[in-house]
Length: 465
Image (cartoon, rainbow, N blue to C red):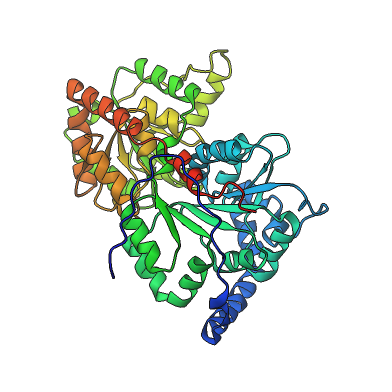
């Protein structure tokens, strides 16, 4: 296939509304594939409430308005409102969508925001983006009845999906109901492409129904085009446009200044990585181990108790962030974070949601969770924006370009395993001048890549409905 090379769009621009294609729906094979998919999703919808009830035991937010996931709503239809619909599935996508939402409000000043999510953490973070008249709800389950119920209730003028949330029934129903649907900040790794090609007919139906895709990189654009996507352009990563919480950053800096040891965090750790970390730290010379204040922040909050148990079983004392908050509330200065006095065998455990900016700002080095097991890594842009140097493992296939750029910018170091990561973190914090240079380089890298949100909106039709 001839490579698709699209220039980085650096100026605000507009395009005509893409023509919605429906001819592919006439294929008998595609109709059969769609029918099979609909039967499976309808069957799975029957057990969805049970799954959500179990999840709600650990994260109560999943119990909220379960009927909305089925496309059922208690109030009257609000389809008469001029909704601009943005879907951000989880916490990271929701925080990144803030810059996109701001740019969309400028382009569509009379529209109201309809914000949908798939996770409780995304729902909680999304509340900060709402204004008077906006609404927030769950993305419906991808069955015909749920999706059509959602579209009938809201009838958005257009929809914008963040990154990878492309669901076949959702896309096809939007075509049928003439709701232009776009995918922005889109990424597609080689591994994800290979998975999508196992269900090639369904994948082509879904991406072919999308009005347009705005990709992060040329590699993403090429892979998306293979699946039949109408690629409008390549604009970079919207996550570079994230605005940090100034209070959290100040609080983190304040905590670091009042701690006489450098702080190294295992950030957004996944199952199995904490055990690797414990083994790696145990191999360090005692003097090096005790010269650092270690901190762990699990990726999923429901795993905090599990991680707490692992640490205590290994002989560490554990101090949880939620315990510090009680002291914080006794003082009027919101930027003051009352971290405990460092202890030789103490680990700080980040057990709160929505405070990653504070955790990164107080840490000199972050070991990147999700990159030491074949999970694809995590977004390291927020860490760099806080001036926190990142040590990444070998598995960053979900964030290939960002990781490689960070390495070139001296904002990140790649190692082969967790033992190497722990040793590298200790080495980095022991070189104060070198660490400061890397921290400045990380912030400069972020500043040089801002602007994707505005460029994205420039590629979308200004009046898509």
